[in-house]
Length: 373
Image (cartoon, rainbow, N blue to C red; front, side, top):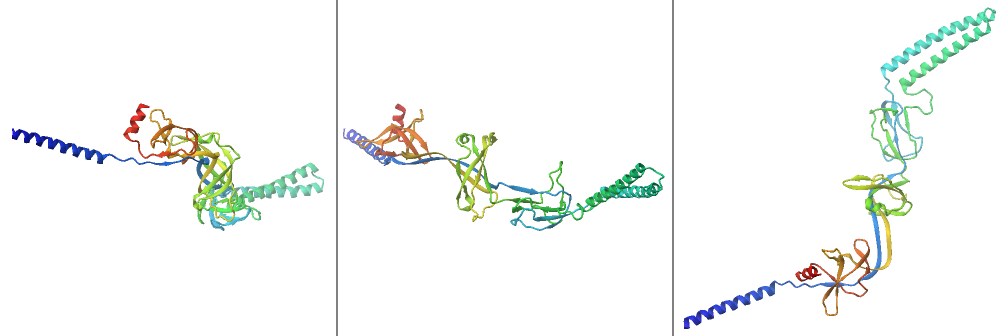
């Protein structure tokens, strides 16, 4: 009997000890959810469309040669300021041997014809003075002689153009590359001694230099199709240059492409804007820029931080948790307005002075209540 009692007491003690250990384990394992609260407040909500792009000069000219040849001299450097008509480079013509030989042959032929016409003209002059031939025959011989001299002169000019690229004494020789606008020399992609090709109907030609007016700059960027409908031509925007300490320049939207282009699965629309740049700023062509376009501005509206808003996982309805008189949080659906990504306008559901829970995670009890709802 005593042995049975001892065994029973031992079993009871073991069970009691197991119960105590389980109790303390569960008590210590429970996390204590502590939440802070924030109140709604009045603020200004602005929504913007951001377009990425570059800053480029509005007027940019590529200078190309009118004759093929070799770059003989380059008289400017990249970054130099030039005026319209300033000499940029000179080209030394390397004539085509076949064309040169053909032109030389035409000179000889024209010279023979001119000499023969001169002999006939002098002979007819003497005969006309003696009354042997009529005035018409004399005038015909004179005309033939003048035509022969003109043909010889033209053949000599053709030969000189082929050999030198221009006629001597010309004020704007084809071998001289001059600036077509006043501005800054942006790029000189060739060097002295390089061979260049003339610009014609079948070839764009070699670019000798690129000149641009840096006083008139435009922004060129792209916006997504979801945002392009919010933009209007003529509205004021801001262009931010990251290369100049995030400096913002005022601009005016001048162009929105009527047709989009698909890029990486999204349709993008090109936009352009005239940018007012400061002459004191060292603006360079090709700077990366962001255009910030304000599409909505609401002043003095009731807002909360967007991080305070939760969404029902079944209905996607937005709600917040408000602290009641009993010290417990109660869910309340809200109607949201304009958001800038940080704060959001509260149209209905929350009033000034309400204490909204700053939530960090949904507890098991919250999940069960949501499932019941």
